Amino acid sequence: MAPSTEFNDRTLPQTASRPGEGALAKLWSKIKLVVTRTVFWAYERGSWQYDLLVLAILMFIFLSPRTWFNDRPTLQLTDLRHQQGIVDMGHGKDGWRYLIDARLVESFAPLKPEEAIPVILKRRLDMPFAVKVIVPNRDKNHVVLGYTVIVAR
Image (cartoon, rainbow, N blue to C red; front, side, top):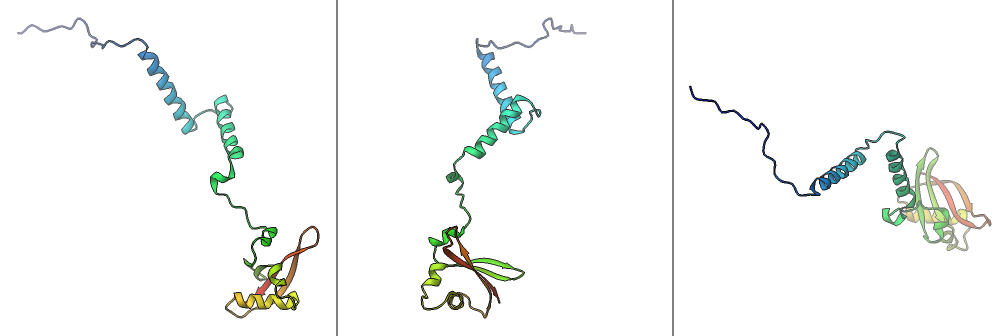
């Protein structure tokens, strides 16, 4: 029988590492751990890391400028002074709702608003309709800004 070869040193040979390389690897592993826990929200509730994440989110929500998100405000009644015309507000159980600018109604000067509004809507709508209600919308100084008109089609 052939003689067996015994291993006296049972460890694999190690490559020589440079000084400071182990510290860099430890730092990188800690950074990866923090990023992983942050992305997957792995911190316990009530820990300082969790509180820091919540604080960062709240700061982003309340301190980021509106222009980043192209946020457009909803149309307010005072905006009708800058946009002359008719705004279709949709329909409900009582009929179709329109918001008509007071300047447009006033441009039909000899006619009263009750007479001018059907003429204006007739130009806009291509179907027969009947005006149910006309409600003037006023600001705090009682100036008429527009009219809410409910129409049955």
